[in-house]
Length: 387
Ligand code: ATP
Ligand code: MG
Image (cartoon, rainbow, N blue to C red):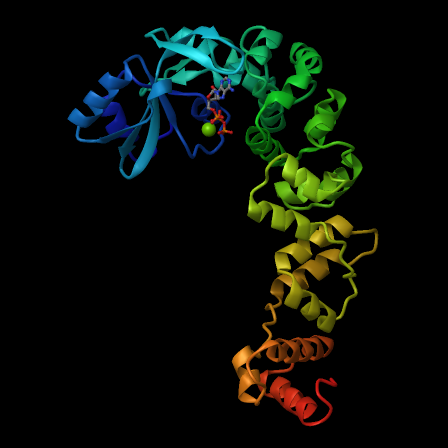
C-alpha cells in the first residue's frame, strides 16, 4: 500500500476518500508512485469544510471541475468530487456531483486508469483493469469510438499508456477507432498535443509505440515523414531516454517549423535546434578539437549530437565519456581587460575580443588570460588586429 507523507492526515479528515487513477494502477503494477489523486463522494464545499475542520489547508484549485487541493505535510493532493456527465459537446464536459463510484470510473479513459482503492487497501475495479494491467492490455472503458469522439486527446493518451504498459498486440477495437477518428487530433490545442507526445516519447523503449502510431496514421499528423529507422537505431545503440533527442532523431524536416506548430517552449526550441546542428566531431577527435567544440556548445548537446550523427565506427562511447569528463573551457578575457590595454571603449573592444578568442580557439582553448592578453598586446603594438 502506498503511504506518502500526508496521506494519513488526509484520510483522517476524509475517511470516505479513495485513491484513484494512476496511483492505483502503478501501485498494482509495482511501479513507483510519486503522486496520488483522490476522489470523494462529497461536494467540494463539504470537502473544504471537513479538511479545514481537521486543521489542514484546502485550496479550491479547480472548483468548476470539483477539485480541491488538500495540503498535508507540505504536500498537495488533488481531491475531486465524484461526478457524472450530464451533457458533452465533444470538448467540454458538463458535470454533476454524485456518490456513485462506478459512474466516476466509467468517465475515465482506460480500464487500467479506472480503479480506486480505499485506505485499507481494498481495490475497486469495475471494468477489469487489474486483469488488463497484468496482461499488458490498454482498453478503453466502454466503446472506443464513442470515448474518443468525446475527447480526441484520448487517442494520444492511448499511445502514452500503451508505450508504458502495453504488451503484445494492441487492442483491436481501440486501433480501429483511432484509425477512423485520427483526424480529430487536429482539433486539439498544440500545448496538449506536445505534452502528450513528450510523454509518449518518454517510454523506456518507444519503438513499438512509434510503429503503431505510424500504422494508425497518427504519427503523420504529429510529425510528418518521421525517420523511424533513425530513432530505432539510436534506441538500439543505447541512447538515453530523452524526448527532445528522440524528436530530433525522428525529424527530417525543419525543426523550427515543428517547434512552431506544437508551440515548444523557448528552452525546448533552443535545445532542439542545437541538437539538430550536424556535428563534425568524430570518435577520434583529439582533445583540442573537443575543447574547441565545448567552448561553443554545452557538453550535453555534443553528446546528444553524437547519438544522432553516429555511424558504424567504433569509439563513440569513449568520445562521450571524454566529453562528459572534460571541463567546459571558459574564454579568460573580458572587455575591461582589453580596455586596460588602451583600446578605447566602443566597437573596437569587441573586435579585439573576437580576434583573441579565435586565436585562443585555434590553440585548443588552453591559453590563459596572461597569454591571451600578451597576444592581444603584441597584435595591437604591431599591425592592428593581425592575429
Ligand atoms: P501519469 O502517471 O502519466 O500521470 P495518470 O493516470 O496519473 O498517469 P493523468 O493524465 O495524470 O494520468 O490523469 C489522471 C487520471 O485521470 C487518469 O488515470 C484517468 O483516470 C483520468 N483522466 C485523465 N485524463 C483523462 C481523459 N482525457 N479522459 C478520461 N479520463 C482521464
Ligand atoms: Mg498523473
